[in-house]
Image (tube, rainbow, N blue to C red; front, side, top):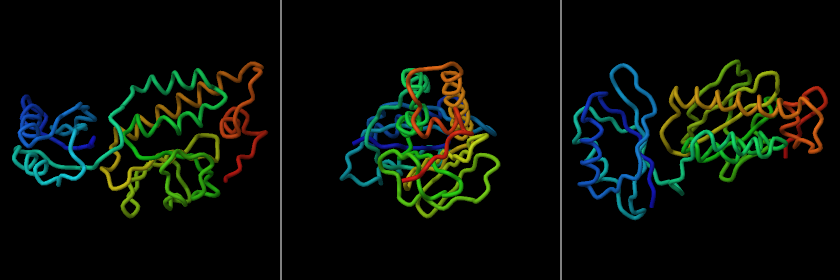
Length: 230
């Protein structure tokens, strides 16, 4: 079964190769490696592994402990190994601009190796307007005011909240019992949100025959729309 491993390593030649060799010796099949960020002489990496669900994590943890300077940030099973590029989201939005924000909710979890995503109105922050499968109900508690993106840890849930400028909406992304969201993931999600909103507004600059979904209408014609939850 696929597993998501997040580690940080000394950012020097051979460190990642040593880790992948140790994981292979422990019986883990390394499917892919993604470097999330480099900072202060260290690199944070996401690795997708093939690891039987019924098998304990002990061998994986010992493999990491045996690599000098390696630190374990998160290890969990996930449902699939598809991690499409960000351009996939852009392509889907261009194909369905009337559902731009709905499409974002559907696509983001696979892009970020997250478990769920939702849009919520800040006035009713725990009731999603639109949500992907596995979204917890009610949503985790969030700050009443949110001038900038935030990363939160709520019980066992890792949550990232991004306010949508000029709107009452917030994008909420979550991982259950997984590694917390990094600065790079926060910046990436903010850029994707800005891009999707920009594409939706561009699509509706001129008259079109397809009406936007209620959620997308909230950003392309906010003065005429009141988004309802439920």
